[in-house]
Image (cartoon, rainbow, N blue to C red; front, side, top):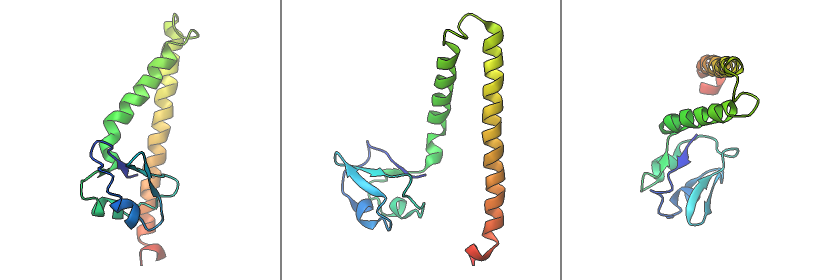
Length: 122
């Protein structure tokens, strides 16, 4: 999912004007991409003169830190706070949760590869 680096966006609105589905709007003079409306065509990446439209892969470290912050918050809940056994069980559940998400992503990637070879890619 493309996103806008607010520090790089100068508010020129080129991406807003060029977005074929109207998924980009201005919020306080900064472009904002509406995730539910974006069709991932990549035009915004191509037209941004300031390189403010970024690829979501750049956010992996940020997302990992967010996930860890969420896990730490859960671990400090009074239910877990003084019970090492419950903490370990929670960590095990979280590992299974993220492993499931990884498996879903891997299977989706595989199915997208199949789509590439169908009528959609012709």
